[in-house]
Length: 163
Image 1: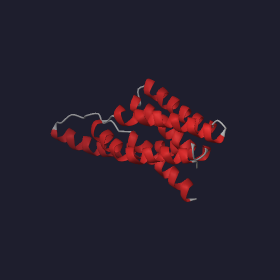
Image 2 (image 1 turned 90 degrees about the vertical axis):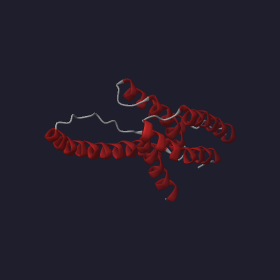
Image 3 (image 1 turned 45 degrees about the vertical axis):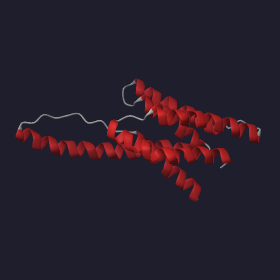
Image 4 (image 1 turned 90 degrees about the horizontal axis):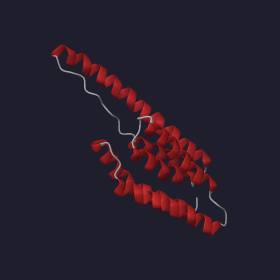
């Protein structure tokens, strides 16, 4: 991985804990944290292009593809725009490691998020049975997806780096 990839991974490292905490608590990924990452991702693509003389196609396409996929899900009502912006950063950063890391990043995010969704649904079902006995009503639960996107990024990154 080039120095530009390490710089972008360093940003993700610094941003991970605050993003996870805020997304779990408030179900949002704050622009004040994510938008500078977009600028840095673009700068790293430019820096990689200038220093190598070759356009970094894999990081550019992986960031764009991940963001476009999340945008489609946001338009359909399943994700938020913070997830879309974070996808651009994470897709670009994992793309700096190669196409396999970028694909694994997205795959792992959805697998981990899916497992969490199943656990939450099962837990809600158990609680719903208890509530119907006591006359309480069911409340709808939303799952913060940003932490699973970040977990997918870190697992795929660690696998590639430690290989």
